[in-house]
Image (cartoon, rainbow, N blue to C red; front, side):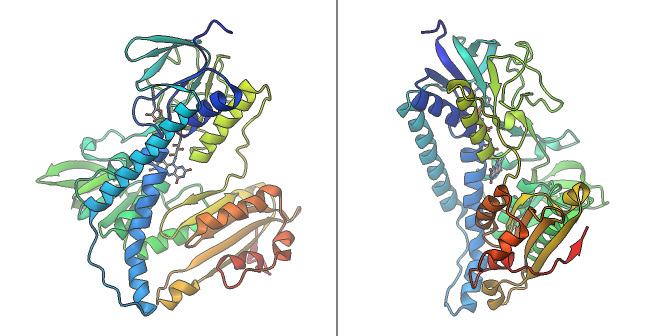
Length: 453
Ligand SMILES: Cc1cc2nc3c(=O)[nH]c(=O)nc-3n(C[C@H](O)[C@H](O)[C@H](O)COP(=O)(O)OP(=O)(O)OC[C@H]3O[C@@H](n4cnc5c(N)ncnc54)[C@H](O)[C@@H]3O)c2cc1C
């Protein structure tokens, strides 16, 4: 028995923190405590992946209803009841929060519903002034959206507020070109809001495959989102119940709401980290090694607060690897290579591995790609196109990247991700018999490269 109150004190009850706490306590018998200052489940459950995906589902129904008519259904669309949806959404989030709390309790984790900070390398101080000692401290405090400073910036809302709007705005300006901005553009457009999107760069979804980004942007515009590239906000001011926005493209327009999704910052302010000797990076992220250990041996950090790959399954992996390393004596680095991921834009994207541009910088490659109108939507008269693309190493024949823009691309990429992670070659894909008639069968029937680079 050590002299510490606990073997582990976790700060933050989000995806990473809850997983690490409950596995350490439940599976290794460690004495674990966790502090959460807001709601259990964190960003993913309360104000991220889960409510966002439910809103994506809600927003897709109008198009589906329209298509149903083309399939012979006599259906009417009587409008969207935001209040009814919001009530149901919030009760689902309450249920999920209860599940997270329950998991901690069931595994014997002691929970403190308050803010915590680090007092020294083995001591956590709670908001009520109580101090608790622990052999190890795990910081899993996540991140928070930030709106840059400019005249009128306080009028902007962020993704956090989008789930709690009193009513749906008639017009919405979304500023940003990352996945959160683009996903909300699709959601609100689908729900009938007039959406304008400003992005200061040359194309949305920076960092992803150029061809995929181009197609998504084209389809978003076709669906009705008014995308302005190379455009930013200069200033905003209140004008009655609207917001007047002056833009860098010389326009001045009124919007009901303005949502900023231009960046998130790690939750490390006033946490006592630097005083305890923990190094922070330029954005305030906690600097850790491959085992998620900081320069202070008793303090570890996982998830968005470390700003490595900011995704829920990655935070969970990091939590599991931490437990394996520290409580099972089996040092386990987190593998951040070839992480499949989905972007729930409309159309959706699933992606794993290198973009064409990044791969071409690395080695000679062949590109196999096809873009076509999918059967279901084409039948309904939609012009919508999908993209299936493989990036193949000329030397090893390995598939270095797979990019899918299509309905259900998130589901497809989970499976293609296994093959790519296993090191499958283009010939392995070709040896696999097609599943017909599907969209993804194109991935195993791409015969000729469209180009080399
Ligand atoms: C709009 C949006 C959509 C997203 N969609 C996806 C998606 O589709 N797929 C995906 O994989 N990822 C998605 N993400 C990212 C994902 O939500 C995060 O990567 C994930 O939640 C990170 O988990 P975490 O444990 O690091 O932090 P979090 O889940 O943010 O949890 C941190 C917790 O710590 C608490 N906390 C902070 N400071 C303190 C303190 N001092 N004391 C006590 N408690 C504290 C916070 O209240 C919070 O509950 C999305 C994010 C956003 C914002």
